[in-house]
Length: 154
Length: 154
DNA sequence: AGTATATATTTGCATATTGCAAATAAATAG
DNA sequence: CTATTTATTTGCAATATGCAAATATATACT
Image (cartoon, rainbow over the protein chains, first blue to last red):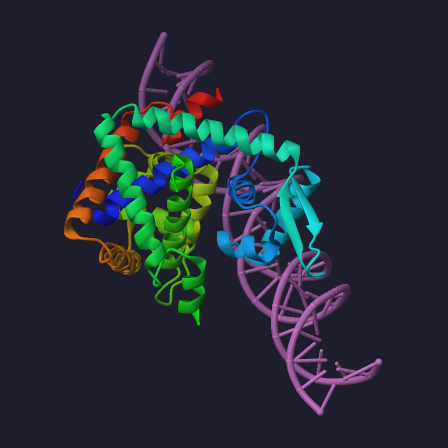
């Protein structure tokens, strides 16, 4: 397989399966989108609805409704911001943290399994490469962020 | 950023944006799922509906309807298999190939942009790493393929 | 202060997507 | 030649989506 795009396409597909499987584990029935939302709230709590919807590239109205669902499921807490009366900030409930942790455990266990098939050196190389990729994508203003999508649309 | 899962989560998210933006380009309005379908048919034409739906991890009934839509859009052709009267094999129409090519061009152009921020050596390292990752994921029977998802479900 | 404008979030609505179970149709086994 | 398996489609109910409009609060201006 020497085609660059093909390599990435296949990799992304595989990680899609990984994500999808990890989020429907452990009794809870979380959709893929919901697991991404939980992850981001876990990573950076107390962000506003707008901020997180932009970070994840989800339409704000869609996101708002997803949050309503997650609040009903008692996984997410919506608190009014003290700075700005229009804003709500999001955090995980105890139950939400448990679910996020379960997903995280699954993911880590799968990642371990994948890396167990490499030498220590190969593993280091791969990790280094992912960092390089992330750094380059962060630099690019043409791709890989929802902001750039908006810019190009206009 | 030293957390392994976090690195991958962010990378996957970025590639998600990349994919999403690439498929809504050039006049056509293709959904993300549809672009993955077009890609797979382009990569391996004349596969059956079942085969491709499994490859992509899409429920067969959902997939069947997506194909109906793509056929109506004149991007995909559904031909009865000569071997087996139950089977339909899929291929791209001329228009479908054009769309797939446009998406491919966009993707490649974005990838070039990302890699332009690295040295030639770094680029080689990253490409080598993606190959390693793909190979390891292919080996794993615990993750990264729709088949394993099924196995675990039962 | 008081009005106009900007921003954050939600809601209405029409459409699209999904998953499961059942229906259909063709192949294969006994 | 009937019973069983396999590939695909359809019915249906539940969810998810995107856009435009509504709501509520903040900020700017005079």
